[in-house]
Image 1: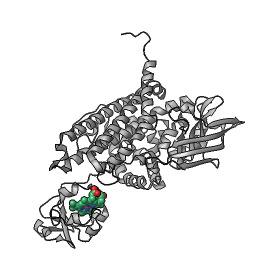
Image 2 (image 1 turned 60 degrees about the vertical axis):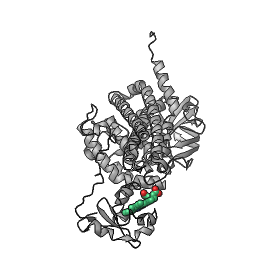
Image 3 (image 1 turned 90 degrees about the vertical axis):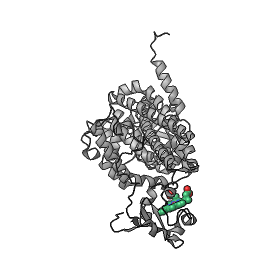
Image 4 (image 1 turned 120 degrees about the vertical axis):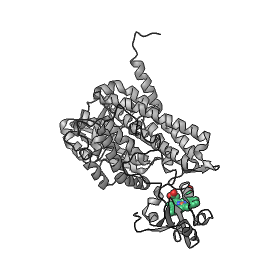
Length: 517
Ligand code: HEM
């Protein structure tokens, strides 16, 4: 709101308006007329009429109870009638794309005065543009969808598609050729896994975990088998519309019968002439409620096989209600004798496990990125809250027990960041085949470590925020969402315990035969 036509007052003038029907207060040098709003105030009128509040500078009281964004909402911003003569506002809203100056709120490479071997100026420009776009355009949509449970709007998908968002989320690859990425900031041949990591960590800053998965994650995990194993004809037929955001795709592996035990899936594909006939069910399929296509793991006479299945009258989906928002489109999918041409086989009959397992590396690394971004946001929220919240007459961060929790949260997020960046660097220097061979174990261990760190951080943050950490909306909204949804990071794309075991088994497999103590 422009201050140019607002009046200036003295604190003495404000003090005269301190009763029901004539109630002004000051927050951060701005004068608000709450005379009519008092009865509508969600915290009730009495707290506003209290002697330390009515007609007074209520800045500290306000920020102990509300997020700054409350004052920026148009219906509240218009309550401002002026400002205090000679005072300046201190609490500024960040410019879209701006870097936070709260310690540890940003990764080292974004922190002024620090250095990193991994990121170039191009990564920095890319980061700035991504954060600005996300906060200006995507964040309001994230809040709306997370609350309503509706899928992302086509209008937003169209905007994202103009930036070639989904193509970028697939990582570096031939599908980027000829595309204008993020308005041309990065050339397709320059785009690397650090650019993609930036996208993943920034997405998580919305504090809306369900929406993050609703944001075309189905495409991120279901398209690579088509790129890596589909025929050129199949790619031509399906990929352009999916990348353009006109059609949607989901990865259909898990079943009520089989989760981490992917070899145990019971959906069958029986060959009849040049067609597969597919029968069975899939559960927890992200984006499944609105997907047009399903990259589906089936059992055949010759073993597990991945088949691309278009939605048809013999495919039905219904929502699975999970503890995060329905905006993710989590579905129960039923194939009732669904007929698909044999040309839709991805990676050869009986080769399904190889296709799925190699695809998992990128998916797990993606989950790691979003978990990391969310953890860093949680650290920032906790540092801010403990600094502004007064308890026992002092800021919360004056309490040693609170500082001890903050220390652990910071240590974890920095450890996660360093390991993720190391693995990302390896990905940049390996072919897909090398990644499959060398990184399956490290990525599995990394994911176990990051998701477990996330759940420990969620627990610490909930203790720090108290009741607000378990309340939807308001001061602790980010903490509540992360506390409720961080288990998704520990389960999706491979349960934590299974991944830890996978990592160690890979290490055992690669032990030199001739090694002894
Ligand atoms: C421009 C002035 C104010 C506006 C627009 C405003 C708005 C709101 C809103 C939207 C909420 C709902 C919770 C949230 O979204 O954060 C709320 C809750 C509340 N407000 Fe205010 N408020 C104002 C000033 C104050 C002041 C000066 C106090 C002083 C003590 C106060 C005390 C409370 C309390 C106690 C709650 C309930 C908090 C909770 O449930 O955790 N408000 N207010």
